[in-house]
Length: 84
Image (cartoon, rainbow, N blue to C red):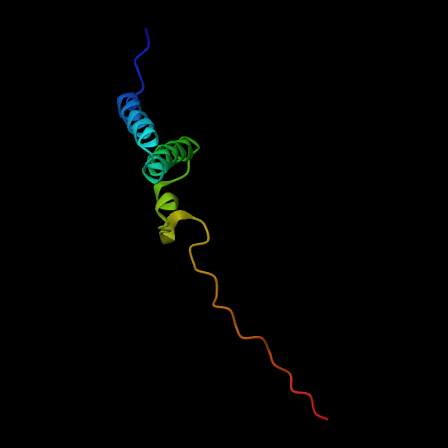
């Protein structure tokens, strides 16, 4: 018999809370619980795919090997003045 997923109890509890919130008409609370579950699974999938934590947090250290410099600020469009 295989071991249950480490977060199985946590997900079960969250799903029960979500069902109770929906039954009571607290749809916003239910949607936030669903969001939390989806966010957790997405982060886990990204980590399994090799995405580093810095990218998940939006922190790009200079040594990560990618483009760590922010894009240049937009410059105002050149204005041309027409002479009549």
